[in-house]
Image (cartoon, rainbow, N blue to C red; front, side, top):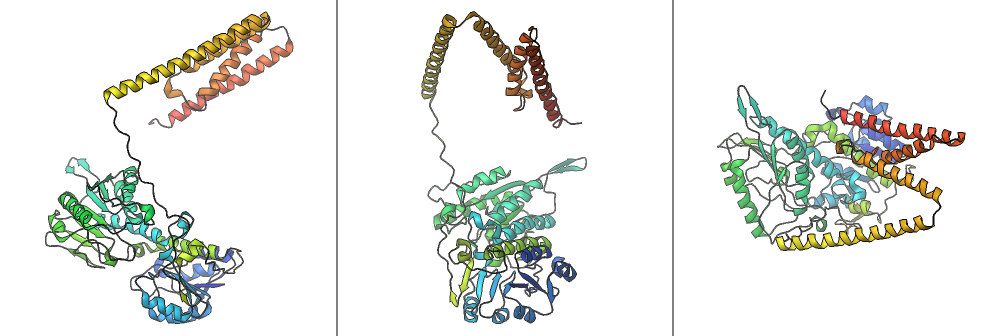
Length: 524
């Protein structure tokens, strides 16, 4: 099939849906690749780089649409681009079908198949095609960079001869992909980072990244990410009031606020109100990643940077991924390439649109002259962390003593039983075994005991999986071999010498390796 990427016509969009590397991989699937002249220039990919990768460079979008069977884009198509689609042609791009009903109907009338990259279901197998997560990851990282650029201090605290600089306090609202990326970037820059999310199961993820989870004392509201495909769901009015009250407490303390809260198919919820902005310190920064859907901050203006009367900077840019066009294009092109890999199961250049496949069906919004949006729920459950298990009840002092006593009695019974059985077996061996066997048996028991003591008395800091068990066995082997090395038989002496040699390598080698391992953690 012929696959082509036109130049993005949306103002300020620098990304491209095909890179030279992704084109190379698509050609391995048996496809032929086309690109509009200059389509990758804003992302740093020259036409010559595409030609070197075997891509045909076409002048003009109209010629490209006419030449290819599959059109791949970043932004949803304009009305003019949608009218260029023809019957049995496939479009793969962001589409947002819930917000673009007229565009959806136009694509159906044209008879084109549309695969919306924003509709890829969030199941494990589809992670490699999850373009929303790819772009959200970049947006979260870039939001922290923009905040740092507009903030008048360091993120990390410093104590210098010229004075003390306190660390910045950052609040991330929403711990989805963008929120977690923002948390990671903020923590790595040394800021004291807080994060809030309505889904309680993300608290562990937030804390594992070094941030502090902002708990809300509201027992009646609990969301399970497994039931919502990993997204947040609309909150009750009571929960929203409790949430806003908590944010009002935090607003005067925070230097930077990054909001990422979005609900699929809805306008962004307003979580940071005008009075919260007024309560913030002069010089504070708000970065609203939901600006394209109305914004989480009440004062956000899409695609603008404004400064309030009290000196708070509010950033409402909607093109964060496009501001890192080369990286964003690389990731998005890989998402597209993985989608086309699933659509080309035979790797023979033939696209098979399997509507029984969870991922393909979920992302397809028009097919065979029909609108197939919304899709049925996937057969495989969406990705979501399990809800934290409830902590066990704290035992009273009496219950702890009773538990310890019961455990002591059980261990005592087990030890007495083992000693009794072992003593009985030793008596049987002593009563019936020949004297020559008993002599060797006593040597073996002593070797085991001495070998055990050799390892037990080694400092715990030197214990490693390499030497702890194997050296105990080697010590037993050496002791046994030393007992036999004075034997009159040449064969026994040879075997004993070999045993000492090989076991010695294991013991001394273990100590040498351990010493080198410990040296790795020492400052030179």
